[in-house]
Length: 315
Ligand SMILES: [Zn+2]
Image (cartoon, rainbow, N blue to C red; front, side, top):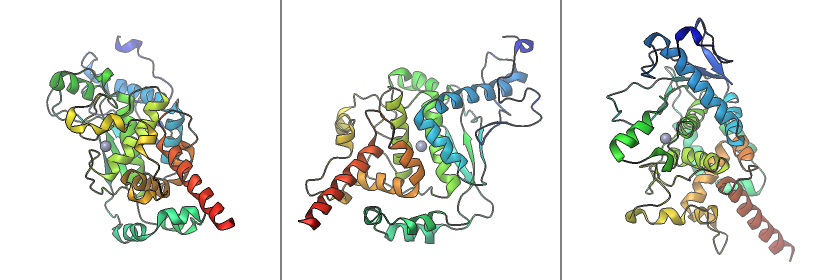
């Protein structure tokens, strides 16, 4: 493609005198080093066009639209997508990242403490989430967010270092990686981002939540479900992570406790935390009709317990 053939897609400013934007997400290709096949002077615009096309692809799904509503609803904090610097080629450092910036940010720890002390599920069961709403809207939280992402970097990493095709790997496609980072970004923007270390392969609670949403997206778009943070792995797992395949159905991911006491289950507690912190987002996700939807499953389990409680009280 010659430079003079290049027509800017909708949403891209060909003169670059103002940033490109898609549903409240700023896209800035300045410094893009790819694609290698493209003239150096055009890489910024090609980068922006590629990102817009990925964002459109994401927006074309129910999961994606729910996520953009969440990002747009995050108030005045900004979110920008910029190229990720390449350490070496093919990249040795495979991942995209999402970073929060706030020169004057307020320490969120007192608010986090309040959240952790609360009995989230009881609040939900009583239908009394006003307290949650007030805490969640806490003034001062949140960051301006920068997502660093270069399409294709991770695919190159898999091919060069793992001898594995990205197409067979859960969560590794450019749109899936970008969506995953946008979930981190939305939570940083809201001031909810708080990495609580986990014993499981998800590593921490924020990875759990990003992978949770990306898995609903994968299920909606008929792709493989990711079961670990450490690597984006195929459904067929290595032996020392034998639980992974078992967890790939939502019933196995959120098993029904015999006594309906779900709080002992880590996955249940983490989904509960997500629902509590981002209720509008979660309420849209629960309506998505796809095979693997732990958010829907979570509400079904709560409903079941509520029915049992009601029956018990009325008998
Ligand atoms: Zn992540």
